Image (cartoon, rainbow, N blue to C red; front, side, top):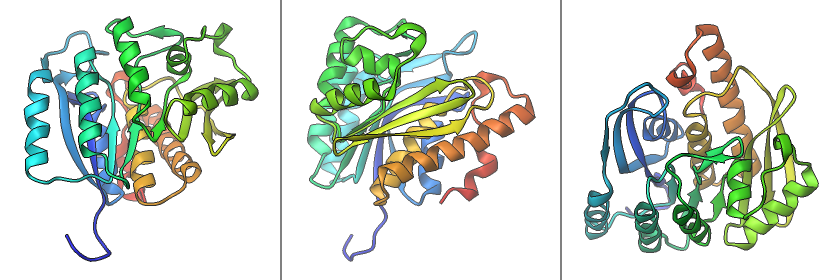
Length: 277
């Protein structure tokens, strides 16, 4: 498309889940609300996410390469690439190839290394997958691990009670940045009644704080990643992008408490979708 003005476009490499408000089902509407086109490359298709008593899953690994090769043949280009939960070492390898194929000088690559939480890896995560995820860092412009994931990527012990000071966070973020991404956000840090996100770029770190509302909720990380990557490809600063995401999620969490929504039903973001700018 010629001309200076055109819509931005982001590739979402993540699963598609029918019920539970997570992954692409959250990312696509939020990115669209920010006036950016979202294009999904499915890693798997699930009836509902794994936080439900049962779920149906159709693994998409064998179909990912033909899918992305067709995009390439059709000349599809992206301003952003965002990766989410990856289910195997093979999928991580496919994503590495996807980034190498589609990343252009202006493409922003965001890796959300969905590996674990509260000091433990998810049951599906193997040592081989952890090593492959470290390799993915070298292709990323921005990485958004929680504390568990940051520790694992750096082969560090998870701190006692999950407590870590800003000096240590800056050291960890700098170490992650040395491995590829110029921007790092260590997400979901909890301190009393606040939730904190530590932002690092250009050799400096800053902490953004929001009041904690309710408990954990499925899809919050996907909502955070979607708003941040869409804001970045629109040319906004990382700090503004993270603040926008945190503010929006806070609003949704408050409404979820009002609705007494089960945690695995996710964020009732639809209520505020038209307010996202």
